[in-house]
Length: 243
Image (cartoon, rainbow, N blue to C red):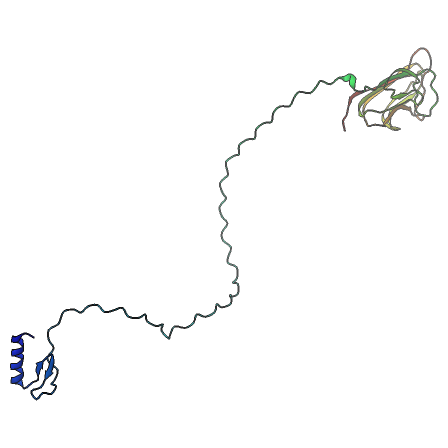
């Protein structure tokens, strides 16, 4: 303590009868501890103290509870509005054209069967309604039978058939396929002269189909037999059919 301050303090203590400050201890005149002194001026700030220990958790902090069960599923929501149509995509790139194949070899008509026949009547056998043309003129592939008067298909395709039959009376003839009438032709001869009854048709035939010319006895079946004129039945394939 500075001498001046101590002197002033002592004088004041003596005047007021208060305790004296000695060795930083306030003593009364009789040697006993006196009353606390008047607070002095603020001192300089003290140094920063050491870091304290970490605080303990509060007793109010409880243990985390278990997860509860999932709630019931709620009702479905209202459907949203229909969205707008998307834009059209751009056209794809066209594919490449394949390479052209090699040209095949030219076909030869001679390599394929060509059924064709033509036959006339001379001394035909009697065979019911079927008109038999017993004299072979042409018979490619041997498809026509001069004993039965029937053509049998061996190559499927389209065929053309025609007949010219001489009559001296009423005559009705039909081209038949498998004994069924396809087309019929009638000629009524009221003057008993020689005349020609003719007819033709294009037929689609499968293997095994048979074609012939037949008469209708109820409507006339007078066929002339003699040297003055010949009756002829002919047929040939126009072109084959595959499959």
